Length: 243
Image (cartoon, rainbow, N blue to C red; front, side, top):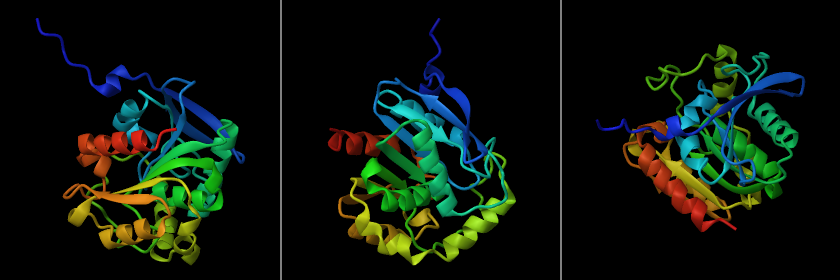
């Protein structure tokens, strides 16, 4: 009898935790060797930490992985007040609570914007960074996306507030890009994404140490639609920028 092939997610042991940050309760998933270099994953709007499970399983082979469910999503607090700056503060509190002075940061869409704000404010804390299909500029984010099914529960107020901020971005997000010193990989989903790919290219030009890789036809959810290509880009980037 041929044994059933096990997926990376099945082989990886995830543990779920709750943590108090700024008087709010957050949920996060953890995997990997506690002695390995730390890596934080931030999901996109309308998802939660579980969205990263396949990628987290891959990364846990070499990193101590923490996937944070951000405010207004899943089992984390729904306080009714949302902004990318508040998300940045949550990330700071999370890293401080885990005693992570420096870490690798990977974010998708909303999570990458939070990471951008964080890296501009505290560049010394980011070892290396990956942005998936986002740039700190206005995008044509659809009010009703057909890519949402399967997402975790979320506070509609979070979507309303954050989409408004996406359409009215703080100019400093763009102007402060040169402050980011960490090696940065920007991954775009190509012509089928609603994120203007020329914005990704311009962001890559302004960052001191960055490059843009495009997976044509992947759309906005690159890590879901093309996971193997996505993992290969991560493998090369992280290996080239390891210390």
